[in-house]
Amino acid sequence: MDPISLLELNQVIKDTLSKTLAPSYWVVAEIGELRVTQKGHCYLELVQKEDSSLLSKSRATIWSYTYRNLNGWFEAITGSPLQQGMSILANIQVSYHELYGLNLNIRDIDPKYTLGERERKKQETISRLQEDGVFDLNQSLELPLVPQRIGVISSPTAAGLGDFMDQLEQSPFRFETTLFKATLQGAEAAESVIKALLEAHDQDFDLVVIIRGGGAQIDLDTFDDYELCSHIAQYPLPVITGIGHERDSTIADMVAHTSLKTPTAVAEFLTTAMRNYDEQISAYNFHIRQNSRNILHRNENQLAALKQTISFAGRQQLISHQSQVRQQSLQLKTVAMAALKSMRINLHGKSEQLPIKLSSLINRNRANLELINKTIQLSDPVHILEKGYTITLVNDKPLHLSGKLKKGEQLTTITDKSRIVSSFAKEIKDHG
Image 1 (tube, rainbow, N blue to C red):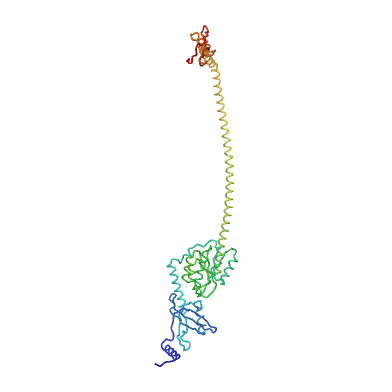
Image 2 (image 1 turned 30 degrees about the horizontal axis):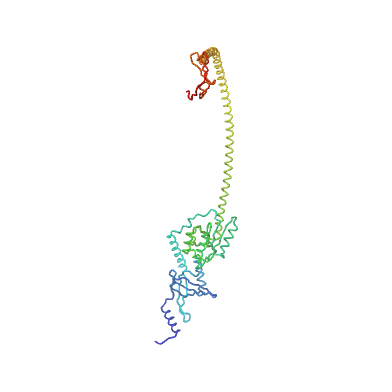
């Protein structure tokens, strides 16, 4: 075969493709890159992925006259313009140019497919969270009565953050807020929010809020990410979302403890919680004062009634006691008179018996004295000597008191008729 030029080869490819391919194809793909030129032409890179693996990639173009109408119509239906990361169903015409090579010309896009694809992925994520058993975990946490220490996850430049902080500062209550910076749109948004949640986890907060200002609808896909929503669902503190959308509810909203439409609404929610607590405390204070006054008034009435009762009962008791005293006085007087009369009779009887008893006592005592006198007479030494007994003295002392008898000591023996004096011729050691 004779050699041909590159141009001739490209012309063969072009002719072959034009004869072989259909005028257009409906193709499912993901927008990997998107760029709009100053002239309004839109250049895309379409990709097909399986998990994180890239299976196919092609360049595509939407010419300016088509892009203006197509993008506006797409955004009106889906709420988001065409952008990177979006899955689309596009009507594509395949063309080949000898100089520029193969190109896919997008003539139409079905927005219903994009909506359906997003919804399909959303439902898959919801089902997965429910199967994991974590979907309702954060909602089961109890909101604090006084939510003052707030962890805030947001972009520092987000307009919604300024609205949120202004609303809190204008409230009459004091809040302590700590900002954890995060990217809230783009491919890195979900990972950035997860990182901020982990940072806030180690600090002492009452709850955590995730806030975001307005933006493209497609940016909300970040808050349908499985990993992010799983972290929110299992977060140990109540999570409140206010990510700035009115129509759709993201999965992050579904698994969060409380979902509100805007950052301002989140600030109003916190302020209202504080106001409700303040009003509750005020109501308790009012009821306590009111009940205290009622109890005091009731007790005063009871004391007054008790005072009257005690006063009346006291008077009645006094009258009763006075009557009892009078009766007891009369009884005592009667008893005393009777006792006195009895004592007088008794005394009179005893006074009559006294001379007789006294005479009897004198006679008994006289007899006793005579008996004692006789006993004394019988014990008189003279009487004893008359019976033949003698008394022996040693040195004028009774013999039993003299102790040991010595030679030459004087011994005196007394009888009823005479006194005999003698002395010891020798010592007698034992005279017992």
